[in-house]
Amino acid sequence: MAVVAALTAWFPTQPARPAAPSRASTAPLAGLQEVLDRRAAAAARGDEQGWLADLDPAASAYRDRQRRVLAATQVLPVERVGFQVVGPTATTTPTATTPATTATSSTSTTSTTTATTVSSDSARSTTPPGTLVVDVIGRWALRGYDAEVASYPLRLTVRHSGTSWLLVDDDDPGTARQLFDLPRVGVRATPDGLVAGSADARRLDDYASALGAARRTVERSWGSGARPPVVVVPATTAEFAALTGRDAARSAEVGAVTSGLLQTGRVARGDRVVINPASWPRLGEQGRRIILTHELTHLLVRASTTHAVPQWLSEGYAVHVSYAGLDVDPRKAAPELLATVRQGRVPSTLPGDGRFGQEVTSGAYDEAWLVVEHLVATRGEPAVTRFYRDLGSGMPAEQAWSRLGTTPDELLAGWQQRLRDLAR
Image (cartoon, rainbow, N blue to C red; front, side):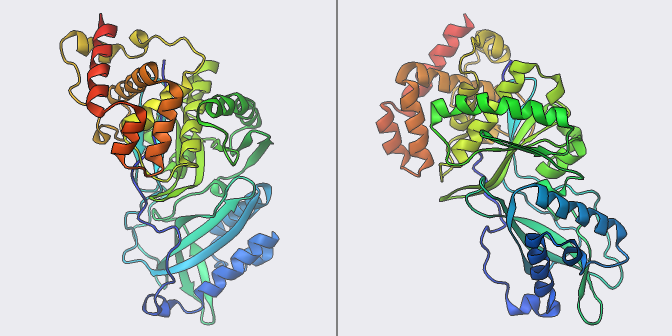
């Protein structure tokens, strides 16, 4: 049994700190920014009347959802809420990209990295008469957990009432759903991190109790994190899909996802580990620990590095850490890979980034794990961790390899021989 996740090299198209919108793009929306500023101030005060004041009175379902959103922001340590108008969207249903996510399989040594279209409650195909769809950048942070504010795309349907703007809905595929969008939010704050979500109290308690051991395992290998982690536990697969931008029907084997905002030269912002309720109950205690440790490895690495590394390193290292203290036999954990080696089909290259796709398949991830296992066996775990930090800091690859004391060609040859030995 094995479980994996990845540090992706994909970066979001939505800027984290966008420039102010041009006068041309916002001229038809004069006054809308003031409306959103009032809502942000109301959220900071916990003022429900102010939060709902600029919503269309006829939009009863939207008002109910927004009432729950405000309640969630008061239960969670939400701070620095803000909204910035970008301008009218070019179409009512354009594709929206989410921040980078990584996913962990619950049943095999596999993982996926995704940059996918955001799911929402339903897709809007037409704009209601008299309304306009507007792109907005939302911002928020969790006090004590997020070093910086992260941004997310928000697509609002609005209409002008004659004197001001009214908000009609945000139910558009261009809106990236957030933790506070869950229908109800319970919170478990522990010294080791925050567990929050719409799952029942028992499940929140289970994840909170498992968090400490997983975090300590990761920190023994990587070092202490500056901020405690956040684990999100939705109650349904539909909520999981909405939070992660994944297809619910294709996510049954995905145990968990790490999602956040990545930009070259900056550490990740707004990282969350999101648990898939469909697969998690099928795991035993050890499987749950492996998945949680794996995801926390990615979360901690992303919080302390600023550049993408090869996927084989990020994937393989996370598996290596998640197996710490366990007697894992590669012959049992990667049987398909070793079967192909017995047939004479030894990989001719280190696993390339393109092989780590959205589908949960074991091949590339098993290979990545055994590449890192070989590196640890020959160079030592401290050296491999330093190598990862070097590449993650933007150090030129040639210099990082030199500090590691080997070359890609030497690693490939040694790994191939290790596979042959295991296959016997």
